[in-house]
Image (cartoon, rainbow, N blue to C red; front, side, top):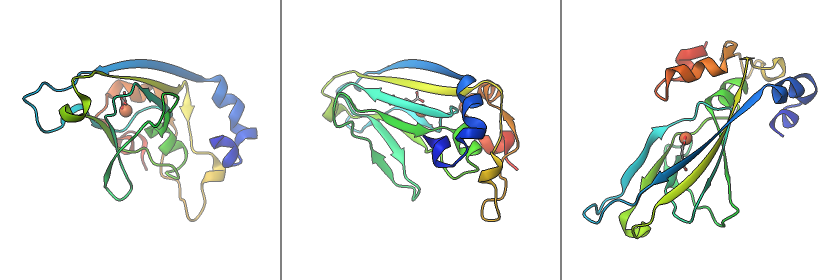
Length: 169
Ligand SMILES: O=C(O)CCC(=O)C(=O)O
Ligand SMILES: [Fe+2]
């Protein structure tokens, strides 16, 4: 869908799909114990190193995402069939920053969670090979911001690495 909307499906779509790897991770976050009145951090603030991330959770909310304006919003999964699709750092670099990878975190609230554990599933996609900004996404208004980069090698640096330090121009 992303490739089609930028008109690069024909040139780059097939190679991309053929070289995509997936990682499925299941997380459990326990409700903070009763003595914690304030919400407790369950997963530190970070951006994902993936190309895309698809998130799903049980009925216990906890995901927060930072907006472009720097406000933090709670993400509500309205039904058991709801998923959140989030851009990772690799998509931000590939799209020459047309799409931003948002800061997000998990915050567990003792009052709301009533001692329930939050279970979530994350499906992360990664490109095996060198990713580079398609020519069509470079123009005067969007000068090239990222060098070609090895996506899987980015993972060796852990969560703390900034994609701009890794391959930014
Ligand atoms: O549990 C969640 O909803 C988010 C987990 C997360 O951000 C991650 O695994 O990268
Ligand atoms: Fe994440």
